[in-house]
Image (cartoon, rainbow, N blue to C red):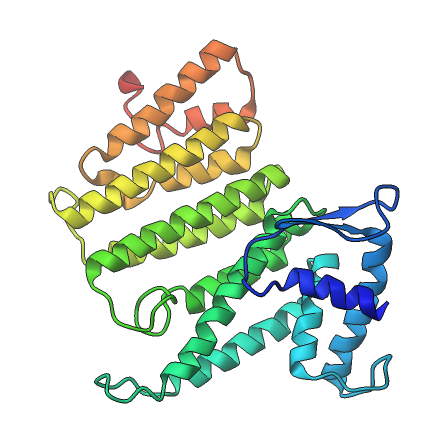
Length: 333
C-alpha cells in the first residue's frame, strides 16, 4: 500500500503544477491507476486505503502521535497527505484548514519583510516561496472543482477555500496579482483583474456543467465579480465620462455577460446560471456608454431563443420577468 500511496501522491503533485482531470473508476474498469497526459483515473478500491493512510499521517502530525509506521508525521508530510484526503473527501475541513495555515504562515513571513528602494533583495526568497505555493493551491482547487468527481464541483468547503484564497492572495503583497511583488501601473492592474475574472468564470461554468444547479459555484462567482468591480470602479463617479478606464471595464463586463449568457442558453433549465447573469447585468457599469445596450441584447436574444424553440421553463421566464427590475424598456426588448 505504501507504493500505491507514493505513486498516487506523485501523480497529484507533478513537478510542474498544472490543472489535472481526475476520475474515480469502478474496479470493473481497472485495478491500477491509469494516466494519459493530465488525465488520471483512480480505482476506488485503491483510493480508499490510500485515504486511510493519508488520514493517519495527517492526524499523526496534528496530535504528535505515531502513525501506522510508528513515526510522527512532519508538516510537509501532512500537507502532502491532504491532497489524497481532499480527493476522497471534498468536505474535509481539517485538511483544508491545515492548508490555509501553511499559506498564511508563508504570507506572514513574506509581509514581515520590509519593502525598500530595490537595493536590498533579502525579501525576495520569502516571496518566491509564497508565489508558487499560492499558484499551486489555485491550480489544485481548480482540479478538484472541475474534475468529474462526485461531490467536489458543488462542495461548499472547496468554494469557500478558494474564496479565502482570492481575498488574501489575489492582489498579492504590493497591490497587484500574486505573480509579481513589484508595483504595477493602473492599466496593467486593470488588465490583470479582468483576466482573473474571465478565468474564474471559465472555472465556475465548467463546474456548473459538472453539477447542475451549482449554487455554491455561482455564489463564489458573485463574490469575485463584486470584489473586482468594487476595486476597479473605485474613484469612478461619473459613468457618462468617455475615458479609457471606463471603456476597458465596460468591454470586459459585456464580454462576461456574453459568455455567461451563452452558457445559460446551453443550460436553460439551470436557474443558478440565469440568476448569476442578472447579477452581472445589474453591475453599476451598465450605466456607462452602451451599457444598457448589452442588457437589452440579452433579453432580445433570450426571447428569440424561446420563440424559436418554443421553450417553456421557469428559469427563462424568470429572466424575462427581471426586465422591470433591470429597468429595461419593454418596447426595446
